[in-house]
Length: 179
Image (cartoon, one colour):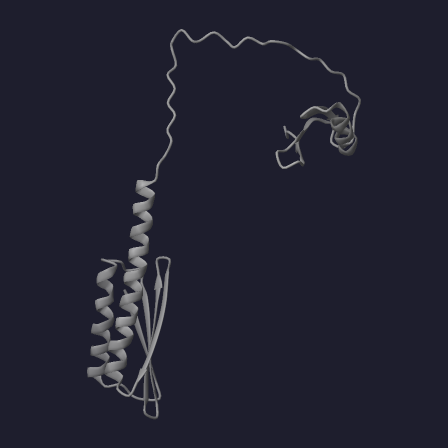
């Protein structure tokens, strides 16, 4: 975990630096031995206001927190508590997503293949058609006129066999295989 500090409008004492570093290092316990975290701490003094801003980034995580009080140590404590609460919420969300994914029902279909093999399904009939090339709008008109659910035609625009069919939502769809 990389911790960087910035001090604005004042010179920080060594004790304040150590205190802030110790408090921010405690945040690392939520992530284990993860070295991919960056913590940026900005400490600012404006007259009587002491402000602490913390940004934690890394591993798909981006957390911001800011706190302002009349004492810098109190501001560090409050912002650390805020960041800790946000991290706990994030960790619990991730755990809940993993639990849901683990408990999700998955339909598994298994097929047994006999060494002898099954008899092929009989073909009940064959239709042969010789069509003239049609444009899509002509194919749609022909589909309406014959009253069928689908029409196989030779598309004049792309010189391929296409299928146009009725959808359940009273529309049309086109199957255009690309070879």
